Amino acid sequence: MMIVMKEGATDEQVDAVVKRVESVGCSAHLSRGELLTVIGAIGDRDRVAGLGLEGAPGVDHLVPILKPYKLASAQFRKGERTVIDVDGRRLGGESFALIAGPCTVEGREQTLEVARCVAENGAAMLRGGAYKPRTSPYSFQGLGVEGLRLLQEAKEETGLPIVTEVMDARDIPDVVEVADVIQIGARNMQNYPLLSEVGRTGIPVLLKRGLAATLDELLMAAEYVLKEGNPNVMLCERGIRTFETAYRFTLDLLAVPALKELTHLPIVVDPSHAAGRRDWVAPMSLAAAAAGADGIIVEVHNEPDEAICDGPQAIATERFAEYAEQLRHVVEVAGKEVSTV
Ligand code: PEP
Ligand code: MN
Image 1 (tube, rainbow, N blue to C red):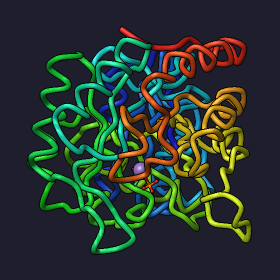
Image 2: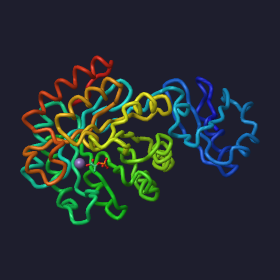
Image 3: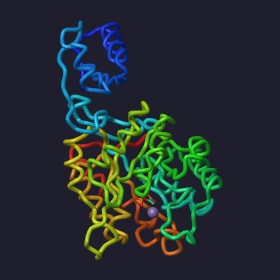
Image 4: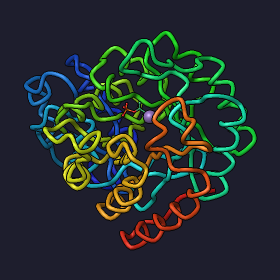
């Protein structure tokens, strides 16, 4: 149930409603918009309905939420979009952020070269995996803590916030030392204990859609993070598995407008993992921006042919400036502004 407070409702009135919601064993999540405060009452709907809050001081009206996800639902923010601020870079609403970097951190020179290039050419954040989810257990699994250290060095030099993946809750203490955004990979989208644990860190989360997940399942996964009191979740469309084998995954760009209707959370598109080939990454990036994506996460490498992981889909550093410039035009046509600092 959503309890929509009146414009100008006082803090005391909001607190009183929160206490009454909690008194019947439900939890109350606050969303303070510019004009309105909405209280999401999570728990047994009948018990909240039984409180008779319609007549309580400061309450405007109650809205039953029919979707299984509540905190992620568009209704929860009464049409306002969530804008995530990562060290001054904004993603969501009117703001678009480009996240770029290597698939995986391979070494010092590679990481710093790519970081410098993307920083100079308009990226808002640096991506790079220190822990890699690989299909084969015999493939390179990431540099781990050493990879995190290199990301930290890249952050110190370029000022770019870091987006990096965590796969195992045991690594969270190390990852939070460096990550400004924690990535949950497609394969872990339904790892519920991991989602809850990452939610408790309070650090923004980039949640990738599972290979065969519906939008409802993606939103339910986001709900696990939000439920822990972490409101900063960005959803990421990265391609789903279909019968088509001509490319790595099918980039489901309809997810962008569809999710915008269902949720207030910002939507990021990853064209790299869907395309699997660098010459298809630029056109799909432009299409994603045109569709209204709030951000793009793209793989870039200084020596793509030598890359340990996902080289064929990495944009070469020499081409990145041109790529970012083209993208900026489409972002502007879509009515957003590119966020950099
Ligand atoms: C990645 O971003 O490098 C990655 C492994 O992505 P996904 O989880 O979408 O496959
Ligand atoms: Mn990759």
